[in-house]
Length: 455
Image (cartoon, rainbow, N blue to C red; front, side):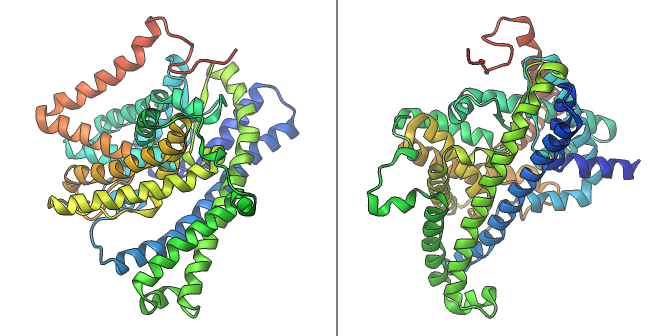
């Protein structure tokens, strides 16, 4: 049984395979010929693998930048990292996490089929992270065995359907009506960014419409502008860290040349992500019409945050920088009040900060992108700090989750149990069930919560 669960975990935690399976099902439902089913299945898989490869290049080149910043500016503390905490949790709650993952994904499909929350969550690795959070927090609350799996699976499946719905009106502005939703558990930070941005800026002042003199026209190329921005970042960090320390990272290469090459590799990673996204969207959305018409009526795919990068490439860079600045200021505030130092993790600040910038730009233009992403940076600094005690009871004191939704879910469940015991956990289950069921019995603007199909 454990081997079967491990195999299912491996398949279901691979977003590329999830997207490919969904595309295949959709194309079969549309009765497409075999060659179109094959190409329509493989292209989204290959596109996501390309996206993942680009993300890998980004992460690998952010790692030395983070080390240079920590050494150069003498910073020590906790670095939020989803992968690290999942690795620790797997040693303690491996079977529970895998079981919650399977139940949660099935629950998400059932919710999409039978309620007005038609969002099918396709970001498998984030589903795995959420399953891990559920097993940790609910296990601390005293749940075990089948009770833990069913409660955790339901809550994971429910949030997988509810979280895309909360901000779908903002997502539609980002995509200009493309039939996709955000399937990423940093969503609350993105919605906060979009909500605040509308009060500080104007959507028509988009980051993508910034007027650049002709001699600086090359900056409109997102690869070049990203490379130049990151070269400045890397060189500042390398100078602060000193050539002796950077040499421990660069091997035989000149320390400052290493910094420049890492910055350019980072830009290449971003470009690979863009190419993968285009391949995914080119085949996934048409294939998903089969699911939306034949299997889960009106279904909407909820996809990874990087899929949205192509909608506002300039906002990606602005969002990353603004979020990182917010993280630094948040860290200084935590230090001043005697809290645990949350060191800005460059991976969450890049992916979540960039997406927050895109959402802020959609409602508040360039000013909204900067302010919204800055607030996201503060949020993913303070929230993980607050969530540390909840996770610390299982021995995760040295790391924590990096994205907003994980911290919020952990805090809500942890404090509900702390205040009123098991009744608090089941109270949250009841509230989630009511949120999902009640719209079925009342008139809403469309067949899908918060999504109105264009005429």
